[in-house]
Length: 344
Image 1 (tube, rainbow, N blue to C red):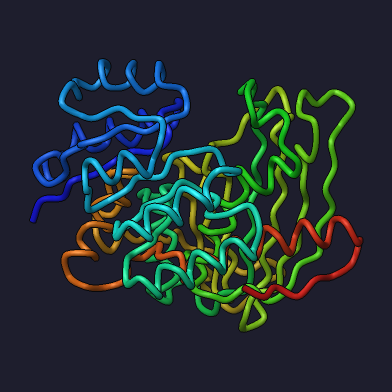
Image 2 (cartoon, rainbow, N blue to C red):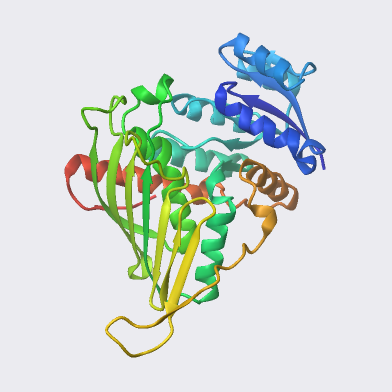
């Protein structure tokens, strides 16, 4: 089945979406970009030229564009502050919507969009592209294999000195809202647990080039007594981690380390004697499905496959709101200096 799509938001992030579609035959054969929407018409025209979309309509008014092109899908790549209105317009025009993260700038807006998608009977999902990489899928498969025993804890470090310029450097809670959502969502996916509560401390060093909240340290309580800790900074120079963080997964039988790139190290207990028990190396499991390890391409494929099958995609907003709830609970904890229960 083929789909007509409008892309809303023609900034830098949109290129990753269009590149994934153009370079993935399973997508380029099924998706036609029939419209580009941005308040900056020059940006939309440049994008059309760059990706050879000369037949796509270009319009600053999204409603007019949807009326004129009648697409099946809207790809929402607008800035977070514009997200709610763009998604609501698209859903009310009968379109399925795939949105950039975060899915909303408040839980109230997120709940509204989940309810609206259900009301109009359309699919609304979020591009949590970082859970669609090989490393994350391998960690999930290793836990599910039982080789680590009972899952006890998940620990993540994210330290990247990222100089974006633009709107991010003016955002409040920039790390938690714009980046930590990836790691928090991946931790929820890898562990298979539900987030219950959080204690978080947020900071912004004097040397930071961000306006607010470039550093956060959080302790999350997950279901089944699993602990998840997050240490992050977007203003730490000198020793960048991977964009996917550095991970330590601790089970009752052993531990797996992942550097967020290609480096894995895993060991399990191999005896019952000694102050430190003897260890044996553990082979980290392959991903359950290699087709789900290609970032944006895999997210978009999952989205349209789910629509075709009449099923909810993995990152449906009705589920992904739980990851967003982790973000806002962490922000509330940082504000109040209190433990905060997580409620989507």
